[in-house]
Each structure stands twice: as C-alpha cells, then as structure tokens.
Image 1 (cartoon, rainbow, N blue to C red):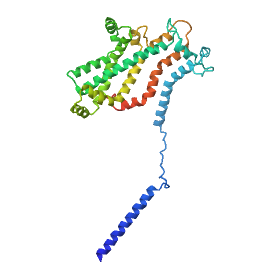
Image 2 (tube, rainbow, N blue to C red; image 1 turned 180 degrees about the horizontal axis):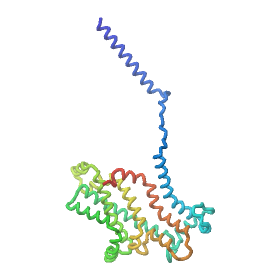
Image 3 (cartoon, rainbow, N blue to C red; image 1 turned 30 degrees about the horizontal axis):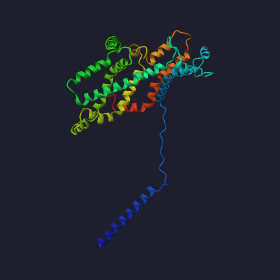
Image 4 (cartoon, helix red, strand yellow; image 1 turned 135 degrees about the vertical axis):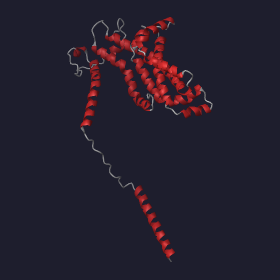
Length: 325
C-alpha cells in the first residue's frame, strides 16, 4: 500500500513539472508579452567629463580653423580677399581659382597649372609604393620565419638606414645615380623612394609576421611548401591589414615628399609638392591668394581621401599588431 502511494506522489510531481515546463514554453513563445524595460543610465556631466569634451572641441577647432580659412579663401574673388575679411563667408563664391590652379597657374616661366605635377606624383607614387611594400614584405617574412645566417645583423643595418636623416645621404646618392645615368629621371626617383621606404616596411611586416602562430609555418613546411609558396599562398593572404597600413604610410609619405622630388626627379618629373611651391613662390604677376589656397587643397586631396576611405582598415591593421613592438 505504501509503495502505491509513493508511486502516485511521483506521478503527480511529474505531471506538475510537465505542466510548469509547458507554461514556461508558452510564455517564452508568446509575442504579446513585452520584454522588461531597459533602464538607460543617465550621462553624468562630471567636471572631468566636461574638461575632456572641452579639450576635444578646442583641439578640433584648432585643426579645422586653417582648413576653413583655406576653403573659403579658395572660393573668394580677389576683390573680397583684399578687404581683409579673413573668416567671412564669400559674398560671390567662384570656382575660377580652382580651375586656374589646376590648369593655368604659373609655376615659374610655365603657366600650365598643377595638373602636370599631379600626374608626375601618380607616376612616382604607384611604382614606389608597390616595390617598397613588396620588398619589405619579403624581408619581414624571411626575417620572421626563415631567419637566415646574419639575419640579426641585416635587420640592424636596415634599422640604422631608417633613422639616418635623409639630408645626410642626398649628396652620395646624387653621385651614385649620376654614375649609372639615373639622376633626374623617373626610374631614379622611384628607386630612391623604394630604398628609403624599405627599412620601415621591413620593420612593419616583421613585427606583424612575428605575431602569427609559428605552427602555421611549420605545418606548411611539413606539407612540402617552399619559401615562395608559403609566402604567396599562406602569409600574403593573411597580410591584408598590414598591407593597408603600409599603403597608407607609403602613399602619404611619398606624395607629401618635397626634398627628394626636388633633387632627384628632374625638371620633367617634378611632383605636385614641388609644383605647388613654384606656384606659391612665383614672382611673376600678382600674388593670387585664392589660387594658392586652391592649389594647396588640390595637392592634399589624395592623402585626405586615402585616410577617409581606408581609415577603418588602418585602425584594424594597428589593432592586429601591425605596429606593435
């Protein structure tokens, strides 16, 4: 009898548990039940927070004010600029200074605008960036995984080259390029930018590859992969973040270069920065401040566009260890 009563109690408990589970399942599937309200924390304007926001606003104004002056000056006619209203908006805005800066501004004795300098800069930047990144990636890969004899000494020499001032090496490089008939030529300036970019690119890729698991390289070696096969099929596809960082660094550095382009490019391949200097410092005719501002903005458009387009990839490359160490 006691055994029967015990079995009935267990059955009743099982039915109660099943009923509770069914009720819970129905409540979970019932879309009419609203979720509990989420309480949002109110932003506490503490003195520290106010100070941080105040500093950021002042810093933003400090950097944006010159750009504002350049923009409004570049669309003002010279009659308004002569009034001395530096921060006032233009009364009669015009794009004529931009057209003149691009196609007809005088760079010394020639009045062809900054257009020729733009295409010269493109012809210099594209091969210099590709070559320096390619050589730096191979060097970083070799120094990280293969480590040939004397790798430490080679890496130290490359780092010394990265920190020696450019001005110290200008004259020796002029003599060397002149001896091989590359001075004042497009291949010569491309070679110079490749040489100067190689140490930094090697450091960048070496630090990135040093953060990758060594087991990947060992597994590829066990599968029979050689030097170039592992690099092209394994390492290079994993290097997208650091390649973006390298492209931004090289394009910005080479595009903004003035000294090397002035010395090594020659009169037929002067980059945009040298042409900009010639426009601003020309002594022929009236000094047109609106044209000067327009030419300055045109010269800086490529680095600005590059940062705006690939800024997300740049941050991702830094976060993945591209510049650590």
